[in-house]
Length: 364
Image (cartoon, rainbow, N blue to C red; front, top):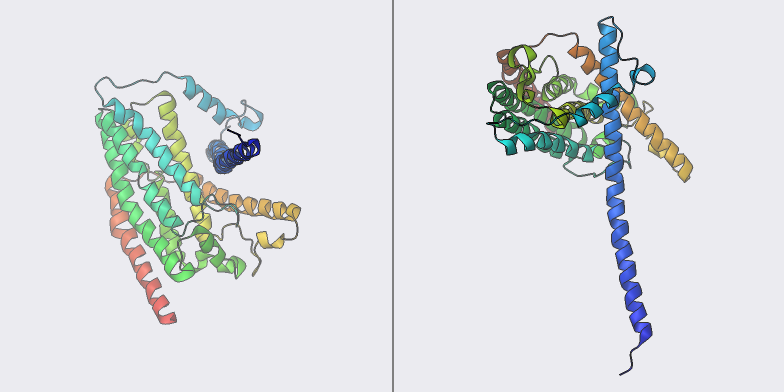
């Protein structure tokens, strides 16, 4: 029996090429995800540092200044300290729910970043239902908070979890109605990239901020309530519930709640930028930032960098407003918070949607 060695070599080379293709495919998927996670982590550290500096300025005191230049490493030092602290479990609580709750809260918020465009070509997944995915995924986070409160076997924690679930239900409906108004009137799409492109024709005056001013105000208030920021931090009100659903947590699990809060604030700020402030576009009519640099690769990289810078500048402007709001406005009562959501913001957002639909029908 004669064995053809060339045929065996061809088969081996074919399988080798296929294996390399699989490896490259895995790398092609992992690199953007890891880059996004790294960028988000740096963004959260910057937000923590900014909040401490801004709050110190508002209260006329000195903020962090010893951990690194201007105290920029203070957030990293606090995270490292939480990483090595003892992880305690409640003796009579549900340890499975207690342990899973923080992970659900963080993972559900991280998934929202997959549909955020930082530039025309810089989005992890440009889905036709991108904004709807964010709304659907963000509604999972309060379930993790409710699990954490129930699993802690603590009345304050359980009340905090119940408040988080009630607050999420109250403010997600106005939030969704505002997004529907944008999709109907402005872009006819739920893709985040399409929404930004629809605002680019007239530059600064084409932003949805001017087309949907009522929706913008409702979205702003609802996003702050979704992030559980003052004056809407009822699920963890210190004077009433010690720390709410976080009361029994320590170590890295408490750190996950801390990270989830700032991740949620950052993603809400990014969506305000994408939906109402024109995303990565500058104020020059009929010009895309990325289309200015199409000739060669160097100019394309430069244009993408400018787009990222513009997106982050608008995002951190909203973050500055959120941080200032936290340190200037008093906390609402739980009944005032629910009344604001159900009796004020819901009718206004519904009326805005009906008004938008009427204009859309008249323009056909």
